[in-house]
Image (cartoon, rainbow, N blue to C red; front, side, top):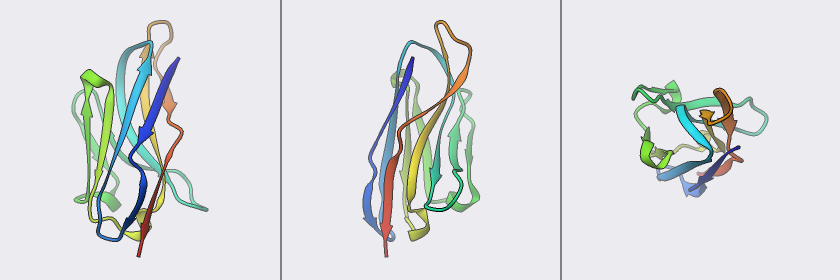
Length: 120
């Protein structure tokens, strides 16, 4: 089994910064994509940013230039540095990873979510 544990959410004012972390643990053989999604109240979950094992990053247009995703393969950890936060960034942020374990083929795992609230 694989667990994704997020940390770093909280309350911040407009224009502020937060850094989210997500560590994967368990019987991990390899991790392909790691990324972040978010879900605001009354809205669908949406992609924020992803980081592939090959080093390719992808961002939602709404966060380009403000958010930076990074990854530490040795620690099986992905980070999301969020700068110039806006009220519309308020959401529950979920970590996502496509993981192959020692006994299972690749599948998608989700973290429990961490709340980010940006106050105006």
